[in-house]
Length: 270
Image 1 (tube, rainbow, N blue to C red):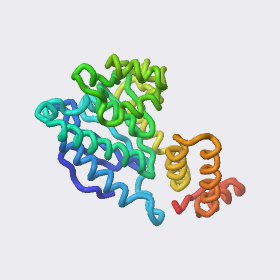
Image 2: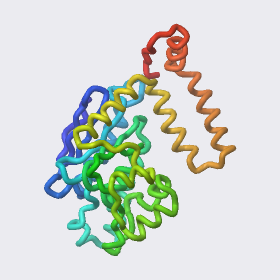
Image 3: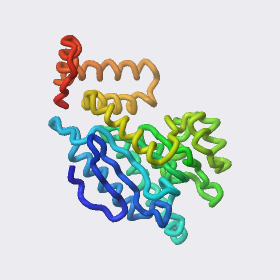
C-alpha cells in the first residue's frame, strides 16, 4: 500500500495492519504543524485507497509513537508560544479535522500508547476507535496548567470515554493517570506489560479483524458514530436501515453461505 513518504511519520504495512508511527522522539513526538500536515495527507491518502470497489489492502490502522518516552506528549508548546489568537484557533481546527477524518475512516483505528499521551496526544488517542496501552503509559489533559483549554477534541471525547464527572475532574485538575487507572475508568481497553507486547497485541487484533467482513466492520463503525447522539428510537431506525443495506452486499451472501456450509468465509469486500 503506497501512501508516499512523510517528514514526521513512519508508515509501514505489516500484514493486514497499517502501522503509523509519529516520529519526533527528540520532541517526545509533539504535534508540530508538520506532524499535523503529515497526518492530514496520510488520512486523505488512506481514504482514497481503502474501501471502494472491494479494495481493502489493510484491515486496520495502528497509531503509535517513536521512542520509549511518549506516544505523543501533546501539542507543540514551543510553536504555540508565538501564536496569535487567530493562529491558535486555526491550529486547533486543523488538528480537529485530522481527528474527524480518523473517526470517519472505514477501518478500525487502534491507538497503541507507550509512555506519555498528554494534551493533544491524549486527544489523538481518543480519536482512534479504541486505545491499548503499555504499563508505563500516562494519560492526561494538562491544558489548565498552561492557561489553556483542550483544543483537539478533549472536551468532547473525554466525557464520552469516561463519563461527564470523571472527564470534568481530569480536565479541570489536569491530573495525569497511569495505565491501570486509565483501564479502570474505561479510557483504555487493555494494558500490556511492555511496548513490544503492546504492539504485538494491536497487530493480533487487526489479524482477528481481517477474518471478518470489511464491509460489515466499516458499516458498524459508521453506524455507531451515526447513532451515538440520537435518541434510542431514532438510533434503532438507523440500525434497521443499515441492517437492510447489509443484505445488499456480496459479503453478506458469502458470510451466510459459509456459515451454512460450515466453511471459513472468503469475503470479497463488496
